Length: 211
Image (cartoon, rainbow, N blue to C red):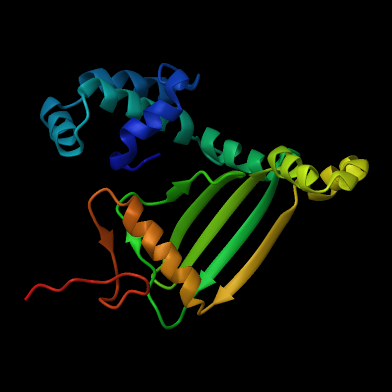
């Protein structure tokens, strides 16, 4: 959400919220202050990331709406993320890829979002040696496919739904080059302009060196 390369994508996803603000004095003051934004600074940002002034303002207002918080209060976005783990409609899978030999790339788009068949996948580069994949799966879609393949399981529909609702499963992979190579390829594909690396030797990626 905060990455400027994703402005238009974020506006498309959260279009209905672009004219909302949090009902707190400081938040409203920040919202109104956009009208007095330094024009030269605004123009530089718009030119650099190829967005209009209107798109830029809408984006900043969304950031205020979802990320603003006071004292120890959680932000709206934090609350939304927590709901994915609490919702009965979802099950959750966490993959941790750790390597003491190879390097994980970092995309200039920051966190990488993907929409696989069954839900939402988020790739997070924690460090040069660690990547976390969070996958929130919509149980209805999984169960529909499961029942279509095995009709006998429909008799246990309620039990299966209760079993997987809100479930959180995690798995740690250490020095798994195949998975790390797959992540690095996804990272390059998702980048707007470039990726960052702590090494010139990158699993899964061919690096072309200048002569």
